[in-house]
Length: 289
Ligand code: AMP
Image 1 (cartoon, helix red, strand yellow):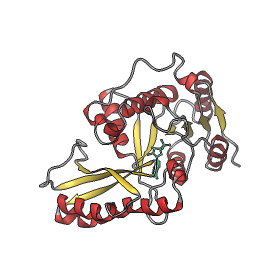
Image 2 (cartoon, helix red, strand yellow):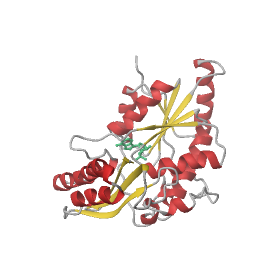
Image 3 (cartoon, rainbow, N blue to C red):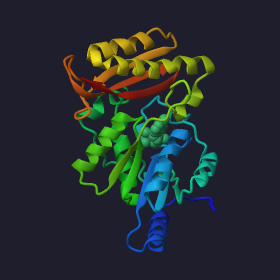
Image 4 (tube, rainbow, N blue to C red):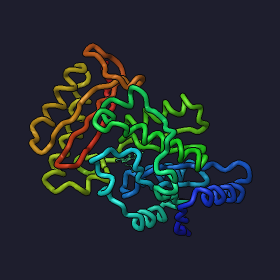
């Protein structure tokens, strides 16, 4: 029988619960799997949680809207917060612990003065539009890794630049855990699920489909090269008056830097746009032969 996961708000309490759960599960050898989220959970998040459940003995889902990764004028205060519904959804997935700290618990001094810096790639794409976003994201992810001590953490491919930067942080700072990346979960019509989609009105939601349609078209055009892939995506997206494109770029998955026109091999196309006031991102793997 599934029971409601314990919602824990204190770091010390979470650590002591995890220590005893570890002993109870498989003494000395239980795998802890962490799924970091900002809540307002949707089917994409729950896919990550199911993956975590299948990989570990003890599943922890963190829910924390991290102020450090929001810039001035961004949607920190209006970001959807639905803790009760989130906990109910997580109960149905057999999650063991929900870690839902307050900002005061995570940043007792107001803000961490020691931070992880994301480096040059952290200033591109999402980082160019949202200065400091990735430093804030990596700082909270590092804190969550240190608090929970997971053997495995599960992230979504939806946030491709985040995945790249977290992988690099693990290597650069010698974290001892594995990552597992879950493919993007989409609604019918292609729009990538996002907590921010609930801010879209019906017309905006329809227009937002042009992002995934553009990426699809790019993947089909990829055999003709980078320029053809970009042109195919632009042809779908630029015709939508409700969609204000921020960037559309093809990057090398090894460096996350933009590829040249003559690039061959694996690549990833990234897109970001404003639909009304809602910032949406998406991406797709390209194979350029
Ligand atoms: P967030 O709550 O937006 O910070 O997302 C928490 C985790 O869920 C991140 O690893 C995201 O990449 C992942 N995620 C969010 N939306 C999706 C989606 N549509 N498909 C797959 N993963 C997702």
